[in-house]
Image 1 (cartoon, rainbow, N blue to C red):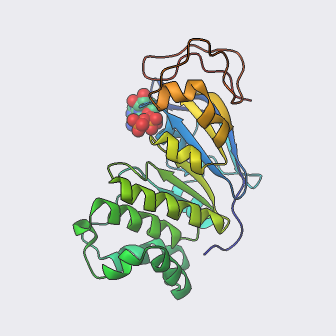
Image 2: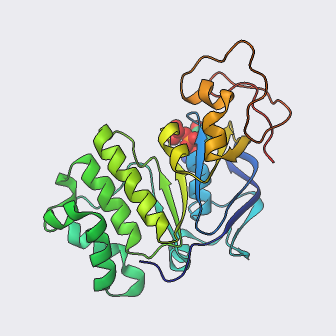
Length: 270
Ligand code: ATP
């Protein structure tokens, strides 16, 4: 249940440093209102850093971020929540000693009271949480905790939902449920920025995707284009490149250098 339709996110030339380390080297990408946009990349490519920067947990050293045309970079996370930017970080981070009910109430804190309609919506999406309503969150299974973390974010009525590795460590059947729910959330208009190691599922769901490699976006395209791209298939789906294959079908042009952990020879994004 949302206040308004999804938000339009624009990230322009954003650089983020951890001291001397340049984790993001001037990345630009866009998530249109109501889109699902996937960020892919090897370990350490900068996916989590990107999400933390969009959600206000990190401040860019260069570049700008706009939400519906308004600059938001530099605005702290707790203020961005009231603009509808809700982040489900990697590792879920539910409050373990609080019940499911209390965790969901915390998600609604910006409204000062829990809206019954929002609660019904979340419990409708996640009937399991209804069954476990008075259970301490720390005693839930990994999949249930992921559902609670997403449910808690939904209680904040997101217009832009940031999901960092929602499928991590979960059994395939639970992963399938989580992806179905992401689609359902998106169908109500919420823009979704999805970080996933699970490239096939993420690109099957996404309208568009970007591939990050050591702090730079090296490839972009629609979900279908990236899924069909030889370079993506080789790097993320473990497939051998055919001898004769040249440039892939996704948006890309001149080659950039590869790394041992990421895809080689990926083209520049547009
Ligand atoms: P993973 O898939 O492993 O989570 P990622 O693509 O999300 O990786 P990030 O966590 O964004 O990558 O890290 C990007 C780079 O920034 C890495 O080189 C990482 O070591 C570095 N980095 C991340 N957090 C910090 C930090 N707090 N201090 C110093 N360097 C950091």
